[in-house]
Amino acid sequence: MIWFTLLLVVLVLAALWASMTTTLLRATLGLALASALLSVVMFSMGATLAAVLELSVCAGLISVVLVSVASLTRPRSIQEEIASRRSRLRRIWPLPLVLIAAGVALSFVHAPVDIVLHLPKGDGDVRTLLWSMRQLDLFGQILILLAGALGVLVLFRKEAKDDD
Image (cartoon, rainbow, N blue to C red; front, side, top):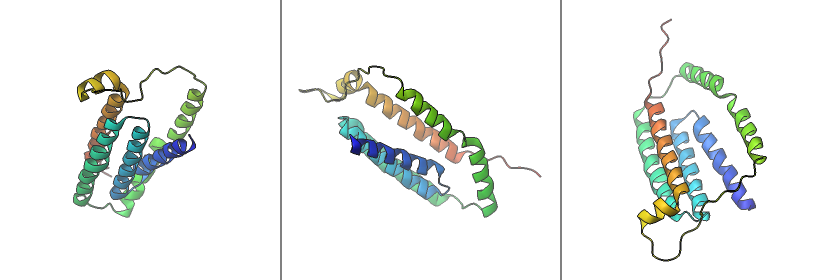
């Protein structure tokens, strides 16, 4: 249980590093690390199909695409970087407080969870496995794909220029 908790903490730290770093290549490496750690978590929970999809698509394919995009972008000037960092910090400073409050609130909730976290015995095809036994994995994959799509939208969003 201690190694699993440590793995989750490192996963959250890698995700935070990926979202907070200012270099696109470092963010891509952080995303790949977080994705690889998430696939280890999924595999240890018995979600082997989701772990394989996570590792191959998110840690592999998405990282390659983002490294390709990083090679096509121009570096920012120091003034643009400072302005961007200040703007980002103004927008996200309450996030750690919200996460801590949510963690404390969730620690007081003791709701029973009836989720199947093991592979069924016998011969089951992938369709039956995903749609009847592994809804949590499927939901996680949908969230990961949506997060990737939103990340691409944010990446290619044009910043508003000030006409001073």
